[in-house]
Image (tube, rainbow, N blue to C red; front, side):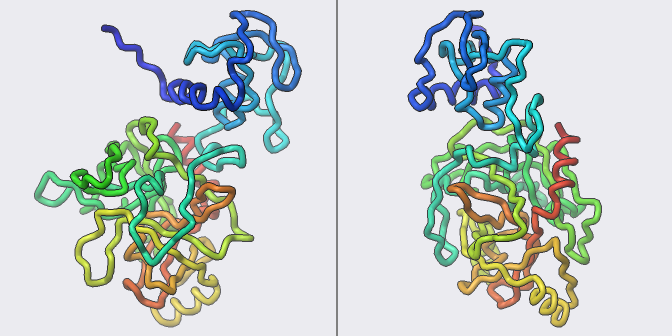
Length: 367
């Protein structure tokens, strides 16, 4: 039997047709290939296969699916109403006429039309995460010394189908080189029957470390991991939105990770943990760490504290500091380092919004 391989974007489009048919009344008309039709904006069009209609593909890519009008539905072979060649029906985005598909970076910024996943509002004192609660969480795997097993020292955030954002300190040590990323699991332990999600272990293709990162200062502690293959569509794996916010931030943030439970625990948690964190004023943070530890904090860093004792022990290096808005998560910062588990010293994070230009340049170079 010959197997037909359907590209990832097309398989997701087929899933969109199935799940959204009733919402958009996709099968309300039944026109043949080449038939005249009318687009949502009342312009004239013709019925064409989705795979041959650039306009429909663009609308799907930028989450403007309500703009797609169907002539018939049939999976990849669905007929959509496509603008005629002499018309410019492409939408305005940021006051610019969009004619090209958005980059992975642009899609990672998300928009209000995107529906991602439900969020648990109850963030307790460093408790276990629910299965599938944080589908963007990545666990970075390293080959263990003298064995075939994997060690998971750091976390990361999935921001595109094959891109993970993490801390530079997680990927810059010669004696500890990451080789893969595990996605889709709330439990790292694959033998844990409480988590029945299928893990996707994907090898690392390329690592990009910020050129101004220095281990001594902990500044510019950010890196990009390019996976050898995109993840396969799964309910337990979804990218997170990158935050562009620098002002009007919420008071409460969350951290997640497979970190240590406390300063006396040698082993890291096999189950994903979550905890509540409050922002610590940057000027106070600069003063406190400079006076007591000789560490210089800069504006591209984010300081967080918790009254519950949940800090970098629970949110391991590289893992996300997040907040929610419009019912989906945003990545605000990346866990960098902490002074010690459970102390009153703030934990230091890398503020993602300060590195948007670098992230975009590197992601574009990797496409």
